[in-house]
Length: 233
Image (cartoon, rainbow, N blue to C red; front, side, top):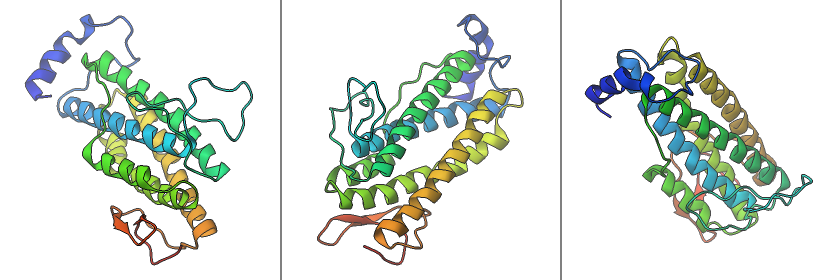
């Protein structure tokens, strides 16, 4: 969206909805363009995570009354029903939790875009996330998928850290709700990364995984992606 278009949106945003977020209106000056681009990126990032997590936990159209280890996630719009490829209960639990959290975060940021900027934004999977999804779609169910998931999803989480830091330090001064959302994302995703690094050590002997670089092309006979670490598995 151009600066000119954003200025026009800012001028008429008060007329677009009576269900405004708590902030008085759209961002001022450079914060407007930054916020729109950040939220659209974060929505797309989370949308890719829905597919990543449903590959791990599987999908269920109808949820069980009682919480149990075999329950799946809600199906991601645009994707077919998927059986669980993970075999570790803790991994599937984390996948379900992330799926729920990131659906809520998508809706929250869609609301900010609509209420502050008059933007009706629908998520899409960006090319860099298509690669991560493809790696997990090709991984064999069970141990191979478990290993690939920890490396892929930790990397996926890490790529949001720099933009989230920008959100916490460069958004409009009046948009406390957005900064609160970004702080929540930062803490939850850092905690998940550390948990996944510990799981790589526990299950695969990888003691030094670092999510700083993209995974290398598929390697070896088992087809696992190679993350940034010295060995294991």
